[in-house]
Amino acid sequence: MSSTQMKHQLKYERMVALPDPGVILWVYRTGSLEAHPFVLYEYQKGRKADYPRQFLKDCSGICVTDGYEVYHSIARERNDLTIAGCWSHARRDFADVVKSAGKEKGSVQESICYKAFQIIQTMFRYEQGYADMPPEESLEQRKRNVAPLVAAFFAYLKYEQGHVAPKMKTGRAISYCINQESFLRVFLTDGAVPMTNNAAEQSIRPFTLGRKNWYLIDTSGGAKSSAIAYSIAETAKANNLKPYEYFKYLLEELPKHGEFEDPSYLDELLPWSEKLPGCCQKKLKSES
Image (cartoon, rainbow, N blue to C red; front, top):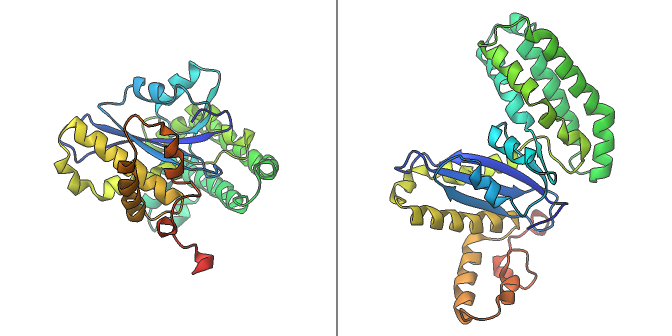
């Protein structure tokens, strides 16, 4: 998994349905441009920096995360790991204020939150047009069209910061973005780095949707086993496999090999192996 070219997206999330309120599920996944995408869930008993520090010790490159300080502290310890911020998280508080204004459109459109929100939305619209471009071309377009918006965004927030009470929601939104500025600018240095960690956010949904089932997972061993099973299932889906058929195939093939056998045979069982049977493969829309 160690690669200077690997783009990682991180998300941390609490497994709220487990009896232990300190249980945390960390999610790591590759960027969208990776040839062999994977999604890994890791159960841990807290949010300490030790957990991602250990997991990422052999990885290098760029991690796209939210603003949790733990990620930043790990990056400061290393020269081969860079943290990129998430613009969806930067947008969230501004969007909440705009939404809460309801029908008072006339007044909200003059607000700091509305103007900041509109700048970010314009950035996202540009990004949608770059989705299918090679990273080099995407970076060139970002520098031409998005970088000036980023500069204007932060200049505007810094100008307005002194005019807003810091404990108001608008003040907190401004402070969050200004404190995250260096991380939010990282995507302007590499066309392969996304603006958000939305892919990792989406990877946590299978757990949150099934939270009522997790009352059965009341031990550390059960939580770890569940994390492993979800890692296999979500990685299978990321590689256009049918999770059920893939699990079935693994359970049929693994018993054929001895415990002390050379583990190289596992390469043929990985989700991106060309030797997987056709029954595991999802039909692409173009093949339907």
